[in-house]
Image 1: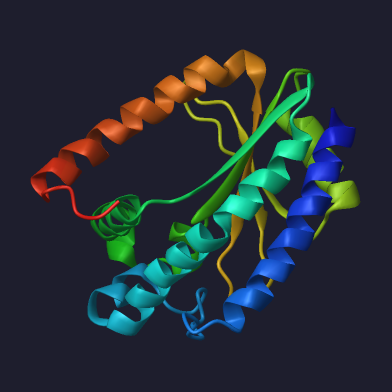
Image 2: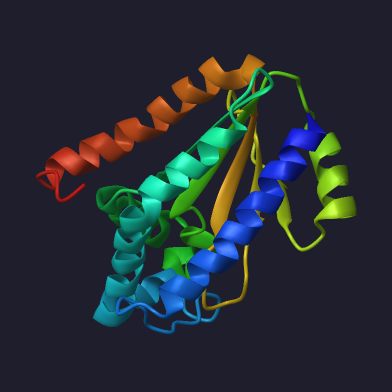
Length: 204
């Protein structure tokens, strides 16, 4: 299973670097230090906020090809899919960080580290320790986190080029945890859905 994960990671890294080059050369791009600037800075900075939503739009414009590319990794051993975060979900996450995480005085890159996410669901079980050891040995430039909490069981891997490009997130799930993880996501989304209704839905 680690062989399949290694192949996927190499592919994502290549796609990520190429995507960042396209992004930086696009009309959407504005140079922002995502480590230096904090979430609370977004409240009074329209340029930074627009850049985040522009990045999402740029992902969606290129997402059809990315989705097709990731299909090659589907097999009996793994299911792979990807998604871009919705505009409403981004707005809710920013609000949540401002209200519940040091009044938003945390780096933007920490909050918005999953604007584009990939998920691999493994039929052969991998522990976080196995994944972490593998990452440290073969992909030491990547950040690997045990994101398990309550019924949610997963390892998250983050791709980062520099402080001026948004990160991509790879979630590694075991098939045995899939149903519980989906249910966990649904519980988290309940607060988001309530907020979305109160704010008349906004734009997806």
